[in-house]
Every structure is written in structure tokens, then in C-alpha cells.
Amino acid sequence: MTKVVDGAALASCFKVVSSCGSEIEAMSDSLINLLAEAISEKNNNRPLPCAISDKHFSSYSMDDSSWVCTDIAYNLPLKNVGKRKTLAYLGFQISMAGAGIAAPGNNEPLVHVFLWKVPVDFNEFFMGFPLEKDDKIRVLDNLLIEWTPEEEIEKWSDREWLFSLRLTSLNSSEDLKRCIVDPALALLRGETVLSALPSSIDGLIHYTDVQQLFSEVEG
Image 1: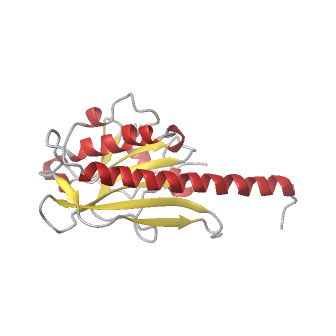
Image 2: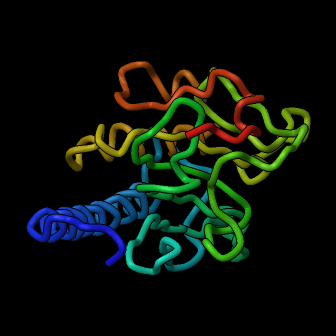
Image 3: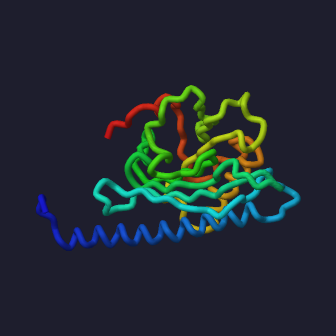
């Protein structure tokens, strides 16, 4: 090893990372199941315009050393009700380090909740900062990143959006439902951003300056 380190401290660090990894895996499994169950429920009072089209799937990203998993994402394919073709993917990306947490003013793990036309695949497509420059990108109410111009939106599948939360604000299944599942379903129904993402949700990331999203964050 190139640096002198305390052996006990090193072992302790690996133990902490392993424990966190196990908790994140359990949380991810719980969250994708909660999303799938909520979308599959027959709720005539608050119907959704979409349905699940196929089984969910995941993707992982490792750091440059290939020793540490820095990101995990789950994708849930969605279609129009009564149809077969997948039109979009509802999912989440949990980022512990690297580009996934390099949002302006942030230095801690994040959960990104998204509806995209393509799934997260860390070899090709994922949420990372800075964003690629795109004049279509806008930030609604400082909370929701939207990739689709308003004039091009006619139905749920026309939209591509994402909101983010601090990972440490999510500590129970109730938190996952209140802070992620319920807001995601509300956005799918076409509710307003402030209705779907009220201030009572702890840990929401505010993107106050859209131009900063395209700039490298100084470490």
C-alpha cells in the first residue's frame, strides 16, 4: 500500500461500506416493490393513465477501482393501459459518490426518481452532473427537472422528469411511500409539481439555478 494507514480503521471502513450496501439493497427491493404494487392496484378513485408492461430490472455502477459500488438503479417499464408497448420507464437511481451526487451545493448521497423514455444503464444513460447542455431542460418550482417542453406534452408518456432527495432522509417504508411513491404517482396523473412534491417532504433537493446544472462543481 502506498500510504501508511491504521489497519483497524481500514477494516472498520470496509465494514461500514458493506453494512450500508446491505441496507441500500434492502431499501431498493422494498421501493421497487412498493412502486409496482401501487401502480398495479385497482383504484377507481384515482386511476393512473399507465400500467406495468414488463418486469423491473436493475443496473449498477462501480468506481474506477472496481472495488466499490457507487450507484444502483431500478427501472420499471410502463405502457398505456390496455396496450403492450413500453413507452417509458419509472425508476430511481441511488448514488453514493461520483457524478450522481455532484449537484450544485450537494455533497451527500442522493436518490433520483425519474420517468424517462430510456432506462438507466450506467454504461450509456444515467443521472449525473453536470447535465449535457440542452435548451429543452427546465426546472419547475425548483424541484422537478423536466426534459420536455410544455407545448410538446399531451399525455403522460410525452414527459421526462426527475426529482431528487437526500438518501439519509429516508428511514422507513412509510418514508419511501410518502416521499417517493406517492409523488411519482401524482406526477404520472398530471398533478402540479407543488401538489406532488409538497414542502412537508423532507430531504427534497432544490435546483434553484438551472444554469448551474450544466457547470462543473468545484470540489
